[in-house]
Image (cartoon, rainbow, N blue to C red):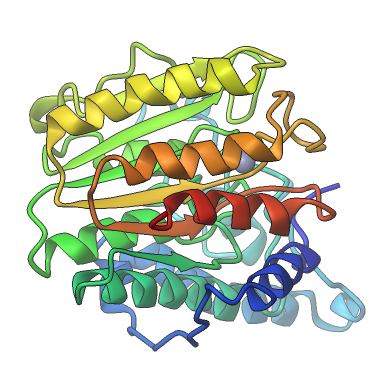
Length: 327
Ligand SMILES: [Zn+2]
């Protein structure tokens, strides 16, 4: 079980059947908002990755449907030595830019990743123009993608790009609240040194949960970003009441930061039956989460991250959005 197109279809169908939702198509926003957050060399790489991989394989590439690296750059390989150079060949470049085996390049990867950014930015536009809230049905998700890499099913960091974009268009302080089961290591890394973006995440303890290497409560940010990074780790089996208590702590911290815009990285892989998570939340929790966030009274952009139980993903996303709506 992993990331798959049926997830987005299931959410879309549920939203279509709810009369309170108005569906809009995304607008193209170009590459500038992406390059403002990600290393332009990563953007260039993803743009040409599939064709360079297939071209290099020649006739032996016939029938290949995805590209996954066999070697990743590991910090121990050049510990105390100069930084790695980007390799010239397509196999080396895969392992230079990607950090795990779960995030293949396929023929449509770049177009889809660009599309997900446009969805998030279109939702952000609605909120910057005065809507109280907007939801972006992004696929692929984004919160694992750092400035100069991709992984965890994520290529471009939709939430981080939206946060930076909003700051360039009048917002002065933005909070990214990440309620996906997994820690958003990419978003944390992107804003680690910044005081104008607060990153607050609730997630399965990285001692047992992907991405394993970050997401611990003592990671607070540095420099101007000191104390604007907050990680709340959750125990296996965490129930609705325990989750709400932790989310209230997160909301108290957001209130102190006084953002003028909130971006929610919404993952419903915290659901009790999710194949990638181990929490015990029911659909009621998602409604409660949306309602608690509504209490902040801050204009809110919600972007889709994870959630892998396709039979409930639509209902759970809709429950979250229902909680966020005016009573
Ligand atoms: Zn997740």
